[in-house]
Length: 168
Ligand SMILES: CC(C)(COP(=O)(O)OP(=O)(O)OC[C@H]1O[C@@H](n2cnc3c(N)ncnc32)[C@H](O)[C@@H]1OP(=O)(O)O)[C@@H](O)C(=O)NCCC(=O)NCCS
Image 1 (cartoon, rainbow, N blue to C red):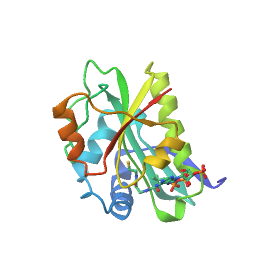
Image 2 (cartoon, helix red, strand yellow):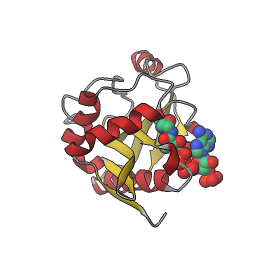
Image 3 (spheres, helix red, strand yellow):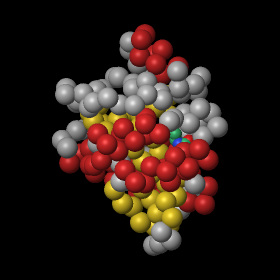
Protein backbone atom coordinates (compact mmCIF):
# COMPACT_ATOMS: atom_id res chain seq x y z
CA UNK A 1 0.00 0.00 0.00
CA UNK A 2 2.99 2.34 0.48
CA UNK A 3 3.19 3.14 -3.24
CA UNK A 4 -0.47 4.23 -3.42
CA UNK A 5 -1.04 7.97 -3.47
CA UNK A 6 -4.45 9.53 -2.85
CA UNK A 7 -4.72 12.98 -4.41
CA UNK A 8 -7.46 15.48 -5.30
CA UNK A 9 -9.03 14.72 -8.71
CA UNK A 10 -8.21 17.45 -11.22
CA UNK A 11 -10.09 18.35 -14.43
CA UNK A 12 -7.14 17.01 -16.45
CA UNK A 13 -7.56 13.56 -14.81
CA UNK A 14 -10.85 13.03 -16.63
CA UNK A 15 -9.46 10.88 -19.50
CA UNK A 16 -7.82 8.47 -17.06
CA UNK A 17 -10.94 8.44 -14.87
CA UNK A 18 -13.10 7.59 -17.89
CA UNK A 19 -10.73 4.72 -18.74
CA UNK A 20 -11.02 3.27 -15.22
CA UNK A 21 -14.81 3.63 -15.33
CA UNK A 22 -15.03 1.88 -18.71
CA UNK A 23 -13.13 -1.12 -17.37
CA UNK A 24 -15.01 -1.27 -14.05
CA UNK A 25 -18.67 -1.50 -15.07
CA UNK A 26 -20.65 -4.21 -16.75
CA UNK A 27 -23.96 -3.71 -14.89
CA UNK A 28 -24.59 -0.20 -16.21
CA UNK A 29 -23.74 1.81 -19.29
CA UNK A 30 -20.73 3.88 -18.28
CA UNK A 31 -21.58 7.49 -17.58
CA UNK A 32 -20.47 10.10 -20.09
CA UNK A 33 -17.58 12.47 -19.66
CA UNK A 34 -19.76 15.52 -18.89
CA UNK A 35 -21.54 13.64 -16.11
CA UNK A 36 -18.28 12.61 -14.46
CA UNK A 37 -16.54 15.96 -15.03
CA UNK A 38 -19.47 17.90 -13.54
CA UNK A 39 -18.75 16.33 -10.14
CA UNK A 40 -15.10 17.42 -10.25
CA UNK A 41 -16.10 20.89 -11.40
CA UNK A 42 -18.80 21.50 -8.78
CA UNK A 43 -17.32 19.64 -5.81
CA UNK A 44 -13.56 19.26 -6.35
CA UNK A 45 -13.05 18.78 -2.60
CA UNK A 46 -15.14 15.56 -2.75
CA UNK A 47 -13.26 13.95 -5.65
CA UNK A 48 -10.04 11.97 -5.32
CA UNK A 49 -7.81 9.72 -7.37
CA UNK A 50 -5.64 6.78 -6.36
CA UNK A 51 -2.36 6.49 -8.19
CA UNK A 52 0.09 3.64 -8.16
CA UNK A 53 3.55 4.18 -9.59
CA UNK A 54 2.25 7.44 -11.05
CA UNK A 55 -0.65 5.74 -12.90
CA UNK A 56 -4.22 6.73 -12.14
CA UNK A 57 -5.79 3.41 -11.13
CA UNK A 58 -8.87 4.49 -9.17
CA UNK A 59 -11.16 7.36 -8.34
CA UNK A 60 -13.98 8.45 -6.08
CA UNK A 61 -16.48 11.22 -6.89
CA UNK A 62 -18.75 12.75 -4.25
CA UNK A 63 -20.56 15.98 -3.45
CA UNK A 64 -23.04 17.66 -1.11
CA UNK A 65 -26.63 16.57 -1.73
CA UNK A 66 -30.06 16.06 -0.17
CA UNK A 67 -30.89 13.10 2.08
CA UNK A 68 -33.43 10.81 0.43
CA UNK A 69 -32.80 12.14 -3.08
CA UNK A 70 -31.01 10.18 -5.81
CA UNK A 71 -29.34 11.99 -8.71
CA UNK A 72 -30.37 10.67 -12.13
CA UNK A 73 -27.83 8.23 -13.57
CA UNK A 74 -25.79 9.52 -16.50
CA UNK A 75 -26.78 13.18 -16.17
CA UNK A 76 -24.35 16.03 -15.44
CA UNK A 77 -24.91 17.78 -12.14
CA UNK A 78 -26.04 21.31 -13.05
CA UNK A 79 -25.50 22.79 -9.59
CA UNK A 80 -25.10 21.73 -6.00
CA UNK A 81 -28.37 21.97 -4.09
CA UNK A 82 -28.36 25.16 -1.99
CA UNK A 83 -30.22 23.24 0.73
CA UNK A 84 -27.76 20.32 0.85
CA UNK A 85 -28.04 18.50 4.17
CA UNK A 86 -25.75 15.52 3.58
CA UNK A 87 -23.07 14.09 1.30
CA UNK A 88 -23.55 11.82 -1.71
CA UNK A 89 -20.96 9.33 -2.92
CA UNK A 90 -21.51 9.22 -6.66
CA UNK A 91 -18.96 6.70 -7.84
CA UNK A 92 -15.96 4.66 -6.74
CA UNK A 93 -14.03 2.40 -9.07
CA UNK A 94 -10.61 0.79 -9.18
CA UNK A 95 -8.69 -0.96 -11.90
CA UNK A 96 -8.41 -4.68 -11.13
CA UNK A 97 -4.70 -4.25 -10.32
CA UNK A 98 -5.54 -1.94 -7.40
CA UNK A 99 -8.32 -4.06 -5.90
CA UNK A 100 -7.64 -5.81 -2.63
CA UNK A 101 -4.87 -3.34 -1.73
CA UNK A 102 -6.84 -1.16 0.71
CA UNK A 103 -6.95 1.74 -1.78
CA UNK A 104 -10.77 1.62 -1.82
CA UNK A 105 -10.91 2.23 1.95
CA UNK A 106 -8.41 5.08 1.62
CA UNK A 107 -10.67 6.75 -0.96
CA UNK A 108 -13.83 6.18 1.10
CA UNK A 109 -12.13 7.54 4.23
CA UNK A 110 -11.01 10.64 2.31
CA UNK A 111 -14.66 11.29 1.40
CA UNK A 112 -15.83 10.65 4.99
CA UNK A 113 -13.25 13.14 6.24
CA UNK A 114 -14.33 15.83 3.75
CA UNK A 115 -18.05 15.30 4.41
CA UNK A 116 -17.48 15.63 8.16
CA UNK A 117 -15.26 18.67 7.62
CA UNK A 118 -18.18 20.32 5.79
CA UNK A 119 -20.36 19.64 8.82
CA UNK A 120 -22.44 16.75 7.45
CA UNK A 121 -23.21 13.62 9.46
CA UNK A 122 -24.55 11.35 6.71
CA UNK A 123 -23.27 9.97 3.42
CA UNK A 124 -25.63 8.33 0.93
CA UNK A 125 -24.95 6.23 -2.15
CA UNK A 126 -26.52 3.78 -4.57
CA UNK A 127 -24.81 0.41 -4.54
CA UNK A 128 -24.81 -1.44 -7.85
CA UNK A 129 -23.05 -4.41 -9.36
CA UNK A 130 -23.32 -6.53 -6.19
CA UNK A 131 -21.10 -4.12 -4.25
CA UNK A 132 -23.32 -3.82 -1.13
CA UNK A 133 -21.12 -6.26 0.83
CA UNK A 134 -18.17 -3.95 0.22
CA UNK A 135 -20.18 -0.91 1.31
CA UNK A 136 -21.30 -2.68 4.48
CA UNK A 137 -17.62 -3.20 5.32
CA UNK A 138 -17.19 0.57 4.79
CA UNK A 139 -19.92 1.32 7.37
CA UNK A 140 -22.96 1.73 5.08
CA UNK A 141 -26.35 0.10 5.64
CA UNK A 142 -29.33 -0.32 3.34
CA UNK A 143 -32.27 2.08 3.58
CA UNK A 144 -35.53 2.03 1.67
CA UNK A 145 -36.55 5.24 -0.12
CA UNK A 146 -39.95 6.31 1.23
CA UNK A 147 -40.99 8.19 -1.89
CA UNK A 148 -42.24 6.24 -4.94
CA UNK A 149 -40.57 8.67 -7.36
CA UNK A 150 -37.22 8.18 -5.65
CA UNK A 151 -37.73 4.42 -5.78
CA UNK A 152 -38.21 4.81 -9.56
CA UNK A 153 -34.91 6.69 -9.81
CA UNK A 154 -33.25 3.93 -7.81
CA UNK A 155 -34.58 1.33 -10.24
CA UNK A 156 -33.03 3.30 -13.12
CA UNK A 157 -29.66 2.23 -11.67
CA UNK A 158 -30.56 -1.41 -12.27
CA UNK A 159 -32.62 -4.10 -10.59
CA UNK A 160 -30.03 -4.84 -7.90
CA UNK A 161 -29.52 -1.16 -6.96
CA UNK A 162 -29.56 -0.54 -3.21
CA UNK A 163 -29.80 2.86 -1.51
CA UNK A 164 -27.37 3.00 1.42
CA UNK A 165 -26.36 5.39 4.17
CA UNK A 166 -23.43 5.77 6.55
CA UNK A 167 -23.42 7.92 9.69
CA UNK A 168 -20.10 9.69 10.15
C1 LIG B 1 -16.14 -1.88 -5.31
C2 LIG B 1 -14.61 -1.76 -5.33
C3 LIG B 1 -14.22 -0.28 -5.34
C4 LIG B 1 -14.09 -2.40 -4.04
O1 LIG B 1 -12.68 -2.32 -4.05
P1 LIG B 1 -11.81 -3.61 -3.64
O2 LIG B 1 -10.38 -3.22 -3.65
O3 LIG B 1 -12.27 -4.70 -4.54
O4 LIG B 1 -12.32 -3.86 -2.17
P2 LIG B 1 -11.44 -4.34 -0.92
O5 LIG B 1 -10.61 -5.51 -1.34
O6 LIG B 1 -10.71 -3.18 -0.35
O7 LIG B 1 -12.56 -4.84 0.04
C5 LIG B 1 -12.76 -4.40 1.38
C6 LIG B 1 -13.62 -5.45 2.04
O8 LIG B 1 -14.87 -5.57 1.34
C7 LIG B 1 -15.04 -6.91 0.85
N1 LIG B 1 -15.63 -6.82 -0.48
C8 LIG B 1 -15.10 -6.24 -1.59
N2 LIG B 1 -15.96 -6.32 -2.61
C9 LIG B 1 -17.03 -6.99 -2.15
C10 LIG B 1 -18.26 -7.40 -2.74
N3 LIG B 1 -18.56 -7.11 -4.03
N4 LIG B 1 -19.16 -8.07 -1.96
C11 LIG B 1 -18.88 -8.36 -0.67
N5 LIG B 1 -17.74 -7.99 -0.05
C12 LIG B 1 -16.83 -7.31 -0.78
C13 LIG B 1 -13.65 -7.51 0.81
O9 LIG B 1 -13.69 -8.92 0.90
C14 LIG B 1 -12.99 -6.85 2.01
O10 LIG B 1 -13.40 -7.52 3.16
P3 LIG B 1 -12.37 -7.72 4.43
O11 LIG B 1 -12.12 -6.33 4.96
O12 LIG B 1 -13.14 -8.58 5.38
O13 LIG B 1 -11.17 -8.36 3.86
C15 LIG B 1 -13.98 -2.46 -6.55
O14 LIG B 1 -14.28 -3.83 -6.49
C16 LIG B 1 -14.44 -1.90 -7.88
O15 LIG B 1 -13.86 -0.96 -8.40
N6 LIG B 1 -15.51 -2.50 -8.47
C17 LIG B 1 -16.01 -2.04 -9.78
C18 LIG B 1 -16.79 -0.73 -9.64
C19 LIG B 1 -17.93 -0.84 -8.67
O16 LIG B 1 -18.70 -1.80 -8.68
N7 LIG B 1 -18.07 0.20 -7.81
C20 LIG B 1 -19.13 0.30 -6.83
C21 LIG B 1 -20.34 0.87 -7.46
S1 LIG B 1 -21.60 1.32 -6.28
